[in-house]
Image (spheres, rainbow, N blue to C red):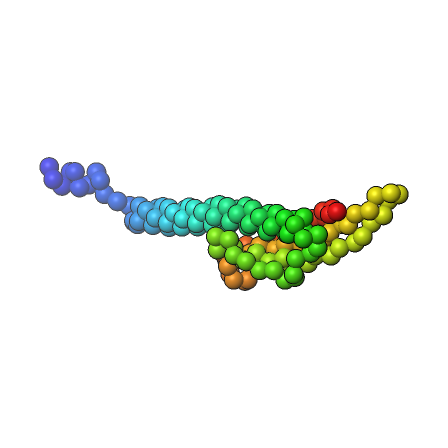
Length: 140
């Protein structure tokens, strides 16, 4: 009886190793898919982090701009350039401030062109972010 079972299940010579090849193929495909998913997850995390840092850099530059406008309104002149300070790890610098006297009929006022830059990290690294704002404001 044992011999009858063996004869019925006999493997033909051309069919040997097919399950090994298909299993190996599935393992390679699943490993490649897993590697791709890990890389995609890391890329999404990095993109989200840089987007958040970019928004924070914009707000830091905006704070530097507000400081410059306050200095102009208080002193009626441009602050010393470059003016540097740090807020929450962001290096903020006022890179330019120019004043232009304007006369329109009986109205006399001064226009101020202000440039502020905020950055964090080291240039050339993956965590470096920078934002530059430029504004024109009027003074008395």
